[in-house]
Length: 412
Image (tube, rainbow, N blue to C red):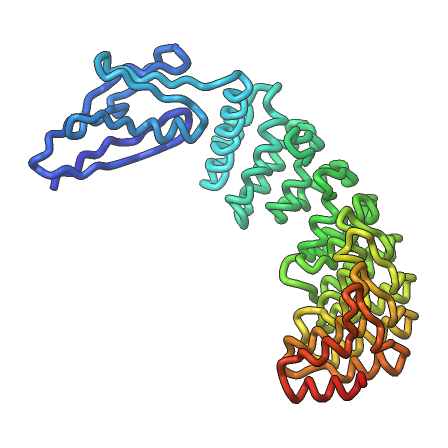
């Protein structure tokens, strides 16, 4: 086998290498070409080559240039590569991206003098755009402490800390909180605006959902509004917040409430902090439910867009991630003691008792204790939904015979 190496393609600041293997029976050769960049001839070295492989032109630079939204044309007769970018805006954006990538790469390699020289060479009109681009790309260098040094060098250049990404309204702080949490502290020290709502999110909401207690406290101390955009409290408790709830979640909830977070706030999906908290059955969720109720959370509040009008009690009896049936029982009891309506109905006429029975249709252990509690507190087993079905009717469809007999007996 012959190995024909096309060398390093140093096109537009990106290094690219490729290789082709050819058997002795295949004729292959490489030759230099003229290189035009937006119509201007550029000086290139001997490593800019085109491979004529078995009668077909192979242009390795195409894979680099096209990845940067350029168009590559090769005239085999004239042996000329022509690389053209689209609109001036696209050319500018590509230049910004390449500059940011170069800065991140040299910083990662510890070449801080080179990084400083690169920063000094950036046109003043492009410096702010490069700054926010760094935060858009920094997640690729997560855990690299050198990137913090790069951010601090750019801040020293008096960049606009609050430059806005026109595509989504994000600021550098949004991107840092979303993608590169280790950069948030340094950026906050520089004094950016902390109360910017973009794409339904604030930086405080983002760090709250990631359980970053220290950053939450820092933002609150800097004046972050815990109620902007539906509230950071809800972001902390949302069922899809990363990896559920933990002890940091409980402390974040306490601190947000201490800073006057609205315990009955709703977001665009109609979710409330209490509805979110009761969706998960675990010790921390019960602590937060108790905390919310103590600070005035409405146990009967629903939102029209919320899952067909479910109440917190309906969610609690059918919550996921059960650590134990006893845990569900405790949460239900807390809500009832706070005057949750045990006979409330959703948009389809289902009652809390209906949801408790439905849980038993899929459970291996049943929750008869919860049903007993609901009945004791006045839940009506004869209430029909809009299809005329009662909780007792649903109980008769429980698969497990032992559980079915027990629940039916309770409801009859």
